[in-house]
Length: 420
Image 1: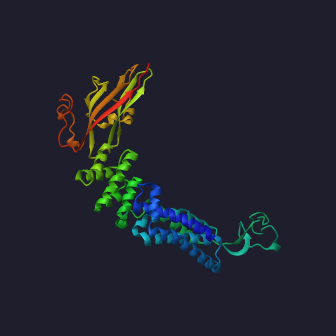
Image 2: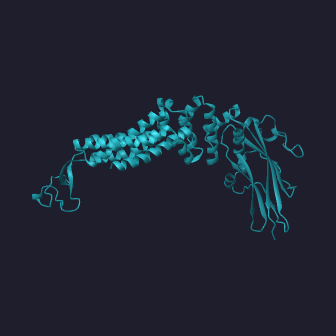
Image 3: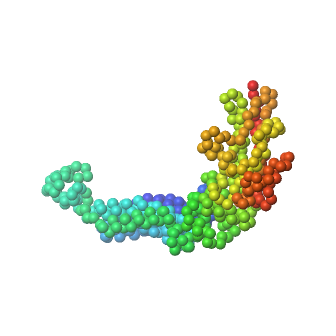
């Protein structure tokens, strides 16, 4: 039993260590890199070695105490499990301080099965070393025979008798109920609400936001109330951009914070460029039609946040086939960027993406190109309709208003292979 507990303790110590390392060193380099960085610390060595040693010592002491008090196997296992969780949390706090809240949150999940074990054990606890009827608890005596005089059960059948008399413990049941309550409360909102909110480390709040996509109010309320270091600002901004790339959008609170950092000049140029470039990306896609012709369409990957401060307006320079502008494809997009979103088009029967149909040449490729200007800014900086004064008043380039925070000139190209 001691060997089993030591093995499980080492495994659990490593899992908890990676959890804390994610907070203290970041996980942008992947799980392997995070694990290597974590194990290189003297705190990690003390934790990995010390935790199983402490638990093994606790098992030995509890076994001796259990023999004196007459504990059964179930009671001993419950005590070992409970004390191991307490040791895990206390040792983590002693080594990493408040950064160990990550491990504390992880430990809450183990309280769920532990609470059910406490309640089940309290309801079916047996005391003593003498056999009793497994059904009603009547004391077994060899001279009585194989039939229980109380309930008529067959004592000779497998499981007909059990060691110890049944004696429920309301204390164990109550402890299980309390643990179950705290497990749900701790897992759902681990120290994220109320007066303890201010004790949570900033690095932990950042991890909550960027790794799990948290959009609820408490983390952002506390983040906005604190002064972040330049390193923390960069980590949060980079994590939010990764989050937008993965999920296609950001929560309003996250987008507002990120836009504020961009407008205030707090981010390096490469992050500012990434903020705009990844917000909306144009693509040319070709597909072969049933009649053999090829349709080339302009589509886009839209990661803007609805109702956010930054919007995008597209001035489309049209589609050219082998250098010749196709009539009617040069236009201004007055409504929104959603017209270039395939998902938005699919919701409107009869609507289609901007495109052109081209014939395949027999002896050479057909080149289709497109040109566009993506204008980023607030609604007040991106006037609609006639306020632009005619974007195509000039021969080859649009008349873009001055003062916009970002303008991207995009050129796209697709080649259609020669066919029959």
